[in-house]
Length: 239
Image (tube, rainbow, N blue to C red; front, side, top):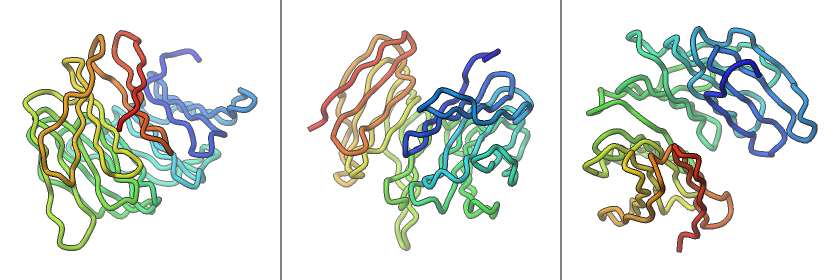
């Protein structure tokens, strides 16, 4: 591909994979054939840092080192830009499961947007840089990790922001499809599980070989998969 893959996402229907590259390119592939479906030569100035495909597969969003997130058509045409502000990289982007909102993280700040470009929310700076984003499956909440725990922003009238405290650096995040469990990967190689509704302390669930760089839930079963910086991949059944 000419450069390293810095961001990657597969569409919900499993038909398309979109890769962001270290040189700023974005490339789409048909997974059934392996053929390239589109290529954007200079999607971002600098590395692409995040890719998120809309639930209906008709659009996708990217973010990068050029302090902006962008929304594209499924064919790779630019639709609009979502500015990060402040000159910081936009390091994370996440499309809400219901499709009506896009979250971005730039340094210590979170923003939530309408896909048409209207900014709905911009938070005050968190205690440290945001390291991961995950939406609740019904779109009613957004979780963000950083050093010191998990911040949850609700999108329900009357609900308050919450903080699940942890004395350490959390670097990856996945919210279970039934919304009952938040899984976080730590820089110290541990995987932690929170049950947000119970307001309790996390369970030290597992330990990998190195920093836990990625977590993902099975869409239908209580199975969690984690990957670490050493290249180890593990799967667990979560009761």
